[in-house]
Image 1: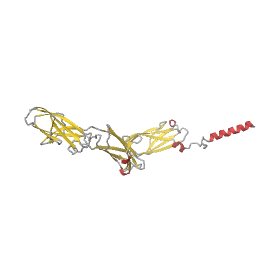
Image 2 (image 1 turned 180 degrees about the vertical axis):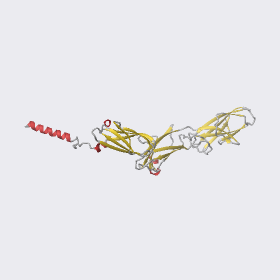
Image 3 (image 1 turned 90 degrees about the horizontal axis):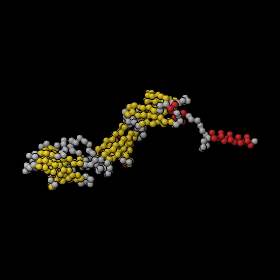
Image 4 (image 1 turned 90 degrees about the vertical axis):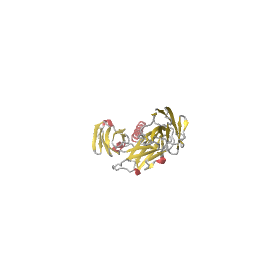
Length: 332
Protein backbone atom coordinates (compact mmCIF):
# COMPACT_ATOMS: atom_id res chain seq x y z
CA UNK A 1 0.00 0.00 0.00
CA UNK A 2 2.72 2.43 0.95
CA UNK A 3 4.69 1.42 -2.16
CA UNK A 4 1.71 2.21 -4.42
CA UNK A 5 1.18 5.55 -2.67
CA UNK A 6 4.84 6.46 -3.24
CA UNK A 7 4.61 5.65 -6.94
CA UNK A 8 1.46 7.74 -7.25
CA UNK A 9 3.08 10.79 -5.61
CA UNK A 10 6.24 10.39 -7.73
CA UNK A 11 4.22 10.22 -10.94
CA UNK A 12 2.32 13.37 -9.97
CA UNK A 13 5.54 15.26 -9.29
CA UNK A 14 7.01 14.22 -12.64
CA UNK A 15 3.83 15.40 -14.39
CA UNK A 16 3.96 18.77 -12.64
CA UNK A 17 7.67 19.14 -13.52
CA UNK A 18 7.06 18.62 -17.22
CA UNK A 19 4.04 20.90 -17.55
CA UNK A 20 5.33 23.83 -15.49
CA UNK A 21 8.51 25.90 -15.42
CA UNK A 22 10.28 27.21 -12.37
CA UNK A 23 7.79 30.08 -12.13
CA UNK A 24 4.78 27.78 -12.19
CA UNK A 25 3.78 28.73 -15.77
CA UNK A 26 2.68 26.06 -18.22
CA UNK A 27 4.93 25.30 -21.20
CA UNK A 28 3.34 25.72 -24.64
CA UNK A 29 4.72 24.66 -28.02
CA UNK A 30 6.45 27.22 -30.29
CA UNK A 31 4.17 28.76 -32.89
CA UNK A 32 5.36 30.28 -36.18
CA UNK A 33 5.06 33.78 -34.71
CA UNK A 34 7.28 32.78 -31.78
CA UNK A 35 9.94 31.48 -34.14
CA UNK A 36 9.70 34.58 -36.34
CA UNK A 37 10.34 36.84 -33.38
CA UNK A 38 13.52 34.89 -32.65
CA UNK A 39 15.02 35.56 -36.07
CA UNK A 40 17.20 38.66 -35.95
CA UNK A 41 18.14 40.70 -39.03
CA UNK A 42 21.37 42.69 -39.29
CA UNK A 43 22.74 44.97 -41.99
CA UNK A 44 26.36 45.83 -42.67
CA UNK A 45 26.90 48.72 -42.78
CA UNK A 46 24.19 49.40 -40.23
CA UNK A 47 23.12 52.57 -42.07
CA UNK A 48 23.55 52.06 -45.83
CA UNK A 49 24.15 55.14 -47.95
CA UNK A 50 22.53 55.76 -51.34
CA UNK A 51 24.27 53.72 -54.03
CA UNK A 52 26.14 51.60 -51.48
CA UNK A 53 26.14 47.80 -51.42
CA UNK A 54 25.22 46.27 -48.08
CA UNK A 55 24.96 42.80 -46.58
CA UNK A 56 21.84 41.55 -44.82
CA UNK A 57 22.29 38.59 -42.50
CA UNK A 58 20.16 36.46 -40.19
CA UNK A 59 20.70 35.03 -36.74
CA UNK A 60 18.44 32.63 -34.84
CA UNK A 61 18.66 30.35 -31.83
CA UNK A 62 15.25 28.83 -32.58
CA UNK A 63 15.84 27.77 -36.21
CA UNK A 64 18.70 25.78 -37.67
CA UNK A 65 19.50 28.23 -40.45
CA UNK A 66 22.31 26.07 -41.83
CA UNK A 67 19.78 23.32 -42.53
CA UNK A 68 17.11 25.63 -43.95
CA UNK A 69 16.42 27.02 -47.40
CA UNK A 70 16.58 30.82 -47.27
CA UNK A 71 15.27 33.12 -50.00
CA UNK A 72 15.84 36.87 -50.20
CA UNK A 73 13.49 39.18 -52.13
CA UNK A 74 14.11 42.87 -52.79
CA UNK A 75 11.06 44.88 -53.81
CA UNK A 76 9.37 41.64 -54.85
CA UNK A 77 12.29 40.32 -56.92
CA UNK A 78 14.10 37.14 -55.89
CA UNK A 79 17.84 37.83 -55.66
CA UNK A 80 19.05 34.72 -53.82
CA UNK A 81 17.69 31.32 -52.74
CA UNK A 82 20.13 28.84 -51.25
CA UNK A 83 20.33 26.18 -48.58
CA UNK A 84 22.18 27.11 -45.41
CA UNK A 85 23.24 30.61 -46.53
CA UNK A 86 21.79 33.11 -44.01
CA UNK A 87 23.08 36.27 -45.71
CA UNK A 88 22.87 38.11 -49.02
CA UNK A 89 24.55 41.13 -50.60
CA UNK A 90 22.09 43.80 -51.72
CA UNK A 91 23.76 45.78 -54.54
CA UNK A 92 23.67 49.49 -55.29
CA UNK A 93 20.72 50.55 -53.19
CA UNK A 94 19.66 53.91 -54.60
CA UNK A 95 16.08 53.84 -53.32
CA UNK A 96 13.98 52.37 -50.53
CA UNK A 97 14.33 48.58 -50.44
CA UNK A 98 11.56 46.39 -49.07
CA UNK A 99 13.28 43.15 -48.18
CA UNK A 100 11.37 39.91 -47.63
CA UNK A 101 13.08 36.79 -46.32
CA UNK A 102 11.45 33.35 -46.57
CA UNK A 103 12.91 30.54 -44.44
CA UNK A 104 11.87 26.94 -45.13
CA UNK A 105 12.91 24.78 -42.18
CA UNK A 106 13.81 21.06 -42.42
CA UNK A 107 10.53 20.08 -40.70
CA UNK A 108 8.46 21.85 -43.36
CA UNK A 109 7.65 25.13 -41.60
CA UNK A 110 7.78 28.43 -43.49
CA UNK A 111 8.95 31.51 -41.60
CA UNK A 112 8.87 34.99 -43.15
CA UNK A 113 10.65 38.15 -42.09
CA UNK A 114 10.50 41.63 -43.61
CA UNK A 115 12.68 44.70 -43.28
CA UNK A 116 12.62 48.08 -45.00
CA UNK A 117 15.98 49.69 -45.77
CA UNK A 118 15.92 53.45 -46.34
CA UNK A 119 19.30 54.59 -47.77
CA UNK A 120 20.30 57.85 -46.13
CA UNK A 121 23.26 60.16 -46.29
CA UNK A 122 24.50 63.23 -44.47
CA UNK A 123 27.62 65.12 -45.55
CA UNK A 124 29.66 67.60 -43.52
CA UNK A 125 31.09 70.83 -44.92
CA UNK A 126 33.32 72.98 -42.75
CA UNK A 127 35.07 76.32 -42.95
CA UNK A 128 37.47 78.15 -40.67
CA UNK A 129 37.26 81.86 -39.95
CA UNK A 130 40.93 82.51 -40.67
CA UNK A 131 42.74 84.66 -43.18
CA UNK A 132 44.26 83.58 -46.51
CA UNK A 133 45.43 85.99 -49.22
CA UNK A 134 43.53 86.72 -52.44
CA UNK A 135 43.69 83.99 -55.12
CA UNK A 136 44.91 81.45 -52.56
CA UNK A 137 44.00 78.04 -53.98
CA UNK A 138 44.00 76.17 -50.67
CA UNK A 139 41.52 76.00 -47.82
CA UNK A 140 41.60 78.34 -44.85
CA UNK A 141 42.73 76.15 -41.96
CA UNK A 142 41.78 76.62 -38.30
CA UNK A 143 44.12 77.38 -35.46
CA UNK A 144 43.33 76.44 -31.86
CA UNK A 145 41.52 79.74 -31.26
CA UNK A 146 39.70 80.28 -34.53
CA UNK A 147 36.01 79.80 -35.16
CA UNK A 148 34.93 76.73 -37.16
CA UNK A 149 31.53 76.47 -38.84
CA UNK A 150 30.28 72.99 -39.75
CA UNK A 151 27.16 72.45 -41.87
CA UNK A 152 25.34 69.15 -42.29
CA UNK A 153 23.87 68.50 -45.74
CA UNK A 154 21.30 65.67 -45.47
CA UNK A 155 19.90 63.32 -48.09
CA UNK A 156 17.16 61.57 -46.16
CA UNK A 157 14.10 59.94 -47.68
CA UNK A 158 10.95 58.54 -46.11
CA UNK A 159 9.89 54.87 -46.57
CA UNK A 160 7.60 56.13 -49.35
CA UNK A 161 10.64 57.57 -51.19
CA UNK A 162 9.85 61.25 -50.55
CA UNK A 163 12.71 63.60 -49.66
CA UNK A 164 12.58 64.75 -46.04
CA UNK A 165 13.00 68.53 -45.66
CA UNK A 166 15.62 69.88 -43.29
CA UNK A 167 12.98 71.30 -40.93
CA UNK A 168 11.77 67.75 -40.23
CA UNK A 169 15.20 66.31 -39.43
CA UNK A 170 16.57 66.00 -35.90
CA UNK A 171 20.33 66.60 -35.60
CA UNK A 172 22.54 65.39 -32.77
CA UNK A 173 26.01 66.95 -32.67
CA UNK A 174 29.05 65.56 -30.90
CA UNK A 175 32.39 67.34 -30.46
CA UNK A 176 35.24 65.05 -29.41
CA UNK A 177 33.50 62.85 -26.81
CA UNK A 178 30.76 65.25 -25.72
CA UNK A 179 27.22 65.59 -27.04
CA UNK A 180 26.33 69.26 -27.61
CA UNK A 181 22.66 69.16 -26.66
CA UNK A 182 22.29 72.94 -26.71
CA UNK A 183 22.99 73.11 -30.46
CA UNK A 184 21.23 69.86 -31.38
CA UNK A 185 17.58 69.53 -32.32
CA UNK A 186 15.01 69.82 -35.07
CA UNK A 187 16.35 71.55 -38.20
CA UNK A 188 19.63 72.53 -36.51
CA UNK A 189 22.08 71.50 -39.21
CA UNK A 190 24.80 74.08 -38.41
CA UNK A 191 27.43 73.83 -35.70
CA UNK A 192 29.62 76.78 -34.67
CA UNK A 193 32.74 76.01 -32.64
CA UNK A 194 34.54 78.90 -31.04
CA UNK A 195 35.90 77.23 -27.95
CA UNK A 196 39.58 76.96 -27.14
CA UNK A 197 41.08 73.47 -27.60
CA UNK A 198 44.76 72.66 -27.00
CA UNK A 199 44.82 69.64 -29.31
CA UNK A 200 46.17 68.68 -32.70
CA UNK A 201 42.69 68.20 -34.11
CA UNK A 202 39.00 68.21 -33.31
CA UNK A 203 36.55 65.34 -33.90
CA UNK A 204 32.99 66.13 -35.01
CA UNK A 205 30.08 63.72 -35.44
CA UNK A 206 26.51 64.37 -36.51
CA UNK A 207 23.49 62.08 -36.61
CA UNK A 208 20.57 63.15 -38.78
CA UNK A 209 17.28 61.39 -38.10
CA UNK A 210 13.72 61.80 -39.31
CA UNK A 211 11.12 62.54 -36.65
CA UNK A 212 9.58 59.08 -37.05
CA UNK A 213 13.09 57.50 -36.82
CA UNK A 214 12.51 55.65 -40.09
CA UNK A 215 15.46 57.34 -41.80
CA UNK A 216 18.81 57.93 -40.14
CA UNK A 217 22.34 58.79 -41.23
CA UNK A 218 25.56 59.62 -39.46
CA UNK A 219 28.89 61.17 -40.47
CA UNK A 220 32.14 62.07 -38.74
CA UNK A 221 35.15 64.20 -39.62
CA UNK A 222 38.43 65.07 -37.98
CA UNK A 223 39.60 68.63 -38.57
CA UNK A 224 43.33 69.24 -38.00
CA UNK A 225 44.52 72.38 -36.30
CA UNK A 226 47.41 74.24 -37.85
CA UNK A 227 49.81 76.92 -36.69
CA UNK A 228 49.63 80.38 -38.24
CA UNK A 229 52.54 81.32 -40.51
CA UNK A 230 53.87 84.39 -42.28
CA UNK A 231 54.80 84.63 -45.96
CA UNK A 232 56.42 87.46 -47.94
CA UNK A 233 55.24 88.61 -51.38
CA UNK A 234 56.77 91.13 -53.73
CA UNK A 235 54.73 94.23 -54.46
CA UNK A 236 55.06 96.21 -57.67
CA UNK A 237 53.87 99.85 -57.68
CA UNK A 238 52.28 99.32 -61.10
CA UNK A 239 50.98 95.72 -60.99
CA UNK A 240 50.35 95.36 -57.28
CA UNK A 241 51.16 92.30 -55.16
CA UNK A 242 52.34 89.16 -56.92
CA UNK A 243 50.28 86.49 -55.12
CA UNK A 244 51.55 83.69 -57.36
CA UNK A 245 54.82 83.20 -55.52
CA UNK A 246 55.83 83.60 -51.91
CA UNK A 247 59.42 84.68 -51.34
CA UNK A 248 61.97 82.48 -49.60
CA UNK A 249 64.82 84.74 -50.70
CA UNK A 250 65.14 87.59 -53.18
CA UNK A 251 67.92 88.64 -55.54
CA UNK A 252 67.42 91.97 -57.29
CA UNK A 253 69.16 94.92 -58.87
CA UNK A 254 66.18 97.22 -58.48
CA UNK A 255 66.59 100.43 -56.52
CA UNK A 256 63.12 100.06 -54.98
CA UNK A 257 61.57 96.89 -53.58
CA UNK A 258 58.07 96.56 -52.22
CA UNK A 259 57.25 93.76 -49.77
CA UNK A 260 53.98 92.59 -48.22
CA UNK A 261 53.81 90.27 -45.21
CA UNK A 262 50.75 88.00 -45.03
CA UNK A 263 49.71 86.16 -41.86
CA UNK A 264 48.23 82.84 -42.98
CA UNK A 265 45.54 81.27 -40.75
CA UNK A 266 45.42 84.12 -38.28
CA UNK A 267 42.02 84.60 -36.67
CA UNK A 268 41.78 88.05 -38.26
CA UNK A 269 39.72 88.04 -41.46
CA UNK A 270 41.85 90.68 -43.22
CA UNK A 271 45.62 91.09 -43.14
CA UNK A 272 45.45 94.76 -42.12
CA UNK A 273 42.60 94.40 -39.63
CA UNK A 274 42.87 96.64 -36.59
CA UNK A 275 43.61 93.69 -34.28
CA UNK A 276 46.89 93.05 -36.09
CA UNK A 277 50.04 95.03 -35.42
CA UNK A 278 53.14 95.01 -37.65
CA UNK A 279 56.71 95.73 -36.63
CA UNK A 280 59.32 95.84 -39.41
CA UNK A 281 63.08 95.62 -38.99
CA UNK A 282 65.85 96.29 -41.51
CA UNK A 283 69.13 94.65 -40.53
CA UNK A 284 67.82 94.46 -36.95
CA UNK A 285 66.89 98.16 -36.84
CA UNK A 286 63.28 99.07 -36.29
CA UNK A 287 61.40 100.74 -39.11
CA UNK A 288 58.64 103.30 -38.74
CA UNK A 289 56.36 101.29 -41.02
CA UNK A 290 53.35 99.86 -39.15
CA UNK A 291 51.28 98.33 -41.96
CA UNK A 292 51.41 94.99 -43.79
CA UNK A 293 53.60 96.45 -46.58
CA UNK A 294 56.95 98.18 -46.70
CA UNK A 295 58.87 99.99 -49.45
CA UNK A 296 62.64 99.56 -49.43
CA UNK A 297 65.06 101.87 -51.30
CA UNK A 298 68.67 101.24 -52.25
CA UNK A 299 69.50 104.94 -52.39
CA UNK A 300 73.26 104.51 -52.73
CA UNK A 301 73.05 101.70 -55.29
CA UNK A 302 74.97 99.39 -52.97
CA UNK A 303 75.41 95.63 -53.36
CA UNK A 304 75.34 93.00 -50.64
CA UNK A 305 72.80 91.31 -48.42
CA UNK A 306 70.14 92.82 -46.19
CA UNK A 307 67.86 91.05 -43.72
CA UNK A 308 64.26 92.22 -43.56
CA UNK A 309 62.18 91.06 -40.62
CA UNK A 310 58.57 91.49 -39.53
CA UNK A 311 56.71 90.69 -36.32
CA UNK A 312 52.94 90.29 -36.64
CA UNK A 313 50.92 90.26 -33.47
CA UNK A 314 47.21 89.61 -33.08
CA UNK A 315 46.40 91.80 -30.10
CA UNK A 316 43.22 89.78 -29.40
CA UNK A 317 45.00 86.43 -29.16
CA UNK A 318 47.86 85.47 -26.88
CA UNK A 319 48.86 82.61 -29.18
CA UNK A 320 49.13 84.54 -32.46
CA UNK A 321 52.41 86.37 -32.57
CA UNK A 322 54.88 85.42 -35.29
CA UNK A 323 58.05 86.76 -36.84
CA UNK A 324 59.64 86.05 -40.19
CA UNK A 325 62.83 87.16 -41.92
CA UNK A 326 63.77 87.50 -45.56
CA UNK A 327 67.28 87.83 -46.96
CA UNK A 328 67.56 90.19 -49.94
CA UNK A 329 70.69 90.07 -52.09
CA UNK A 330 71.34 93.36 -53.87
CA UNK A 331 73.30 93.22 -57.10
CA UNK A 332 74.51 95.93 -59.48
